Length: 227
Image (cartoon, rainbow, N blue to C red; front, top):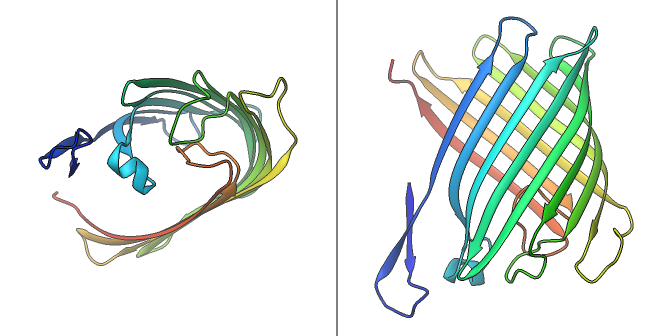
């Protein structure tokens, strides 16, 4: 898709800000490995200042979820993003590693360790600490019923980050996250989705504008199958 906004060069003519995403996912039969690759190009406009001059993001994320021993599964993710705002460039890279434990068919406990780096911690308009560390545990649930699907992901942990002027990573602070989805099948081709997402942390996988991020959103949508 695309967005139109007032030109940042002072012209009254709107400018086009394209956005696109590509995702490919491979899931084997049964409890086999799951591979996921997502590439996206979008604009970050979370504040009035960023609406006038947004951050352009080109990002690639690859993930793996593979069986280990018994009910244990290996979880890993690698991320790289090019962030551009005007003539200012920044590169963000990150890795995540952890394990998941299936306590029931629909329920899984998870633990993850995450590291993120920014090459330009002096970037203007958004928060880009030089180094971020996050340790978290979570609870994942997903179950399908005759006409509905219910899923949620709840987690919490600790995190710390290094500002550009600090020689070492700072003190630990709490981090909380929550996500839930309700999908209701209206018929063979129509489905209503209600999604809730909330975070309370200092840093995030998304692009935030300050060193404290509190975010809540509720989204309702209609999905129609063409075949």
